[in-house]
Length: 374
Image 1 (tube, one colour):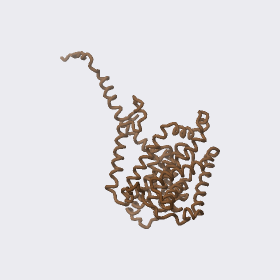
Image 2: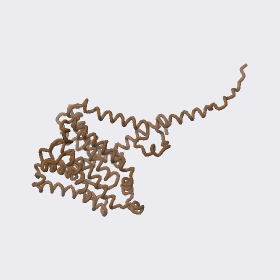
Image 3: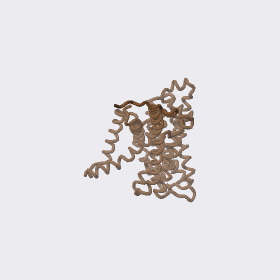
Image 4: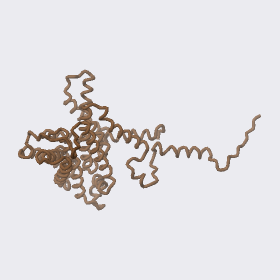
């Protein structure tokens, strides 16, 4: 006959519920389920979990090693992708974070491209001087065209920025003495800082990577400041922002200026990548393409600008590979690209208005809780 023996617990030893609770407490910060910041520095960090830091390290190592393992064609595509990321970041600052619609991306890129072309080819100035001048010139012109934003919203502001696109294209074609008209400006030299030249695609790649990192860090920190929060307040409700003390007109012009600086810098870098500027590189289709980037990637998201730029820039290459694999060599890839581009915009607007960034965020949130149901 068995008898139960009561075991007296050791004084100070944790009970089973306490051990289970301590195990969960040690696991919880690692899986990133919830917000458990205990210091102000942790709360202000750009990457708050171990998983996000590991992803950042992985992406950084991949980006640095990419030109050493990829061919010239893919390195060139990566260079154009980085330029598109800078331009998409600038447009997302204006549209996604400030709520000011714009369809003049091509025009502002043209201002930056032609500014650096005139300064380097016609005036013989160095790249390191022409690049910031191109960005500042574009910022000033963007702020001028942003003046109507005080009175106009939505579709009306869209038409006003479309007027900027038309005006800039008209000036490029008519000011032949300065822009060479429809022929464009040839003979643009690769970027150089003194004796250091970036004429090789791989060298140019690292220069573009540097500018992309700077652009992302600046944009990420901008919205942690008073200025960035004012942008977001204007986007959410400009009347309430004005009542709260935000100078709406000032910050709207500032948003146009900052966005245009990004875009003008992207246009200048594109000029030094192609070594030529021409009106067909900056037409209305370029503006629509960049607007599609931030819609597909995700409005009001820095990572969304990156995802959208990657989607649009890699779309022609992906379609070419797909048609070749399926034996559809005679397919017009340009027409197919336009069809997929339009379907993608409509599909994201209907099924996921917050774009690829929201889809990726949902995936991360799912694995934060997995295998639990809630």
